View 1 (cartoon, rainbow, N blue to C red):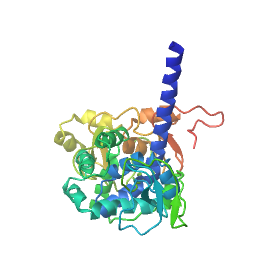
View 2 (cartoon, one colour; view 1 turned 90 degrees about the vertical axis):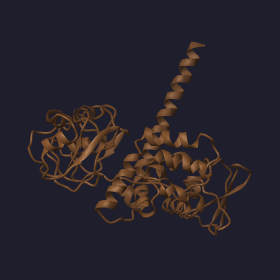
View 3 (cartoon, rainbow, N blue to C red; view 1 turned 120 degrees about the horizontal axis):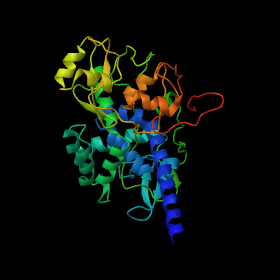
View 4 (cartoon, rainbow, N blue to C red; view 1 turned 120 degrees about the vertical axis):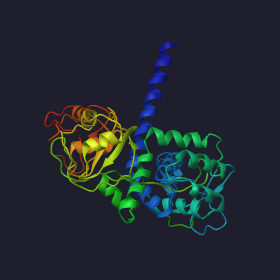
Length: 363
């Protein structure tokens, strides 16, 4: 009996880990699209990604793989595109088929934006993901009574709020720019969810979709700039004003030319602690815009790894992911001055196996 319980526990743990890996891969693939859609439509990126993960089973559902339908959106009377049929609340219900995941994401945003019973959601603060989660259930998006709780758990487990904050920052600091799944995939080196062109008008598939009617996500941006040691490179950082969170730690955006001491006084933190939490060399005036944590960063990241973009250093990644620099050095067998290459995977939670040929984390 004891042996059976142990075996069941191991199997359960393996299943949970596999689901987590799939969700993180989904986020890396579609985070930029979710951000782009938030800028275009106002649907919070955190909500879009959480719905995409739930409704498409992290891109693994038949509806997502065959029909590119990531949000379980049903045909409705106005739909004139390709169709497929699944058993959901009733047998053989009609679901929309999209040429690509990008079309699914866009239709999801438009679906919420154009239907009167979802209009009240757009009066909420875009960072109020709890209000959005409960509002979607209230408006009839899903039939599951625990749908809001499921969305909130996904958002909190994977720190999806950071993508809504990034979208807000981009709207305040630069013009909105459309991002395609192809562009995102090339940048992140993550394979996209299989996308099959819907050539026939109607596709027959039998499988259980997600919770109910929906669309698709994607989005985030990484800081790009060469860095030496524990000092960040000059670059424009697009984050909101005031206190926000990265990886469950409070952080502010310090602007170039501002006194570090004045920021310490403003946010009621000793200067020494501000320097310690951000692994800085002592300075009087900020040499360029910097993310500054006002409490200790976490030892582990919100996701398993970070894909390096051109010019990023380990210190850049420590700040953008909210992970202590010493932890990243330990996990990846690197030092702060190591020059990283675009496409490298930097582990954020576990120690990389030591290679005989190189101490670097595997790509």
